[in-house]
Image (tube, rainbow, N blue to C red; front, side, top):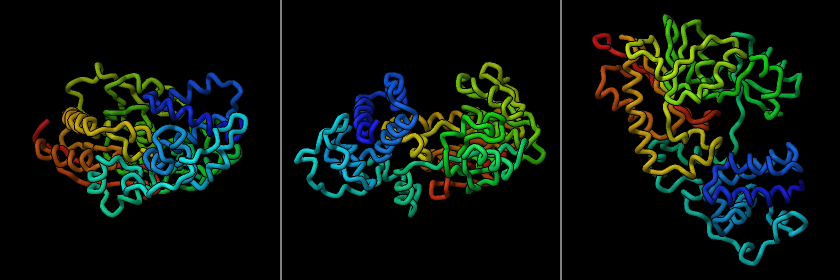
Length: 390
């Protein structure tokens, strides 16, 4: 495919997203039906689609319209490509720009320019303070790719060497001593020997830093209460010999964990909801709660587009219920760690304050990470459960 043909394909995919189809499903459907498209074509189209998703509102403003074609025009302008060099009308290329599309447009308002949902901007501004604009700007661009080195099997330099043998170049990442940032050939990671042999896992640097925060001295039992795919369980297993139980309200999310555990040489027990005894107590319970995902919107930009005030209210209620349920499984004097990949104080500090107001816990420590720190946006608070209650 020519570069212009890739742009035209991306426009068609964006129009399907506008019609309500999930972006991943759109791209998968296109790839399956386009046998002529090679791996580089698929990667390029994906990058274009996700580039527009990250700049959903500013691209429309700069392109003078809300459809896929207008948004692509705006995206190209925002990222330094003159649209007329691509919209040529040549074979498989988008049709040439019309008179309206060549007009200059007024500068977008501040929320639009930052690709921040207008309804959410005041909350994010209160949560982030002076970092609001720089963080929103960071979310407009592609996220770096980070690996976690499995220190139970290797060390940083040895892992870098194995990856380099396959052309995957890395450098030590920010925030965690186990993090590597991939600087070249990130798409080769999952077919590499280092990944296959369990030397590395894909995991954001801030997510690794959250695990680094968890106090493990004297801890013999850990419950990963909202384990999802089990990335934090695997990171914990590399650092401790404690019993680790991985639990999730949706057991389907844990289906791949046994395979991942075997690859990493980790001992993790998968505990479906029905198999978690009501009286089970743990020294440490980690709650990586369902949330807006606002700290990871550059990885999942569609979440920003689909997010709503009603969904935020729903999530806050869910987070409170999960914290209450998780605290029930913390042993007296044990630790409850509450984490989200959210930038919103509504989902972070306010939830901790609300829990402390209704339950016997002491707030020990909390940390905020934003994309300005190098990884995704994350929050983590550590709370100790009082000894005078279950």
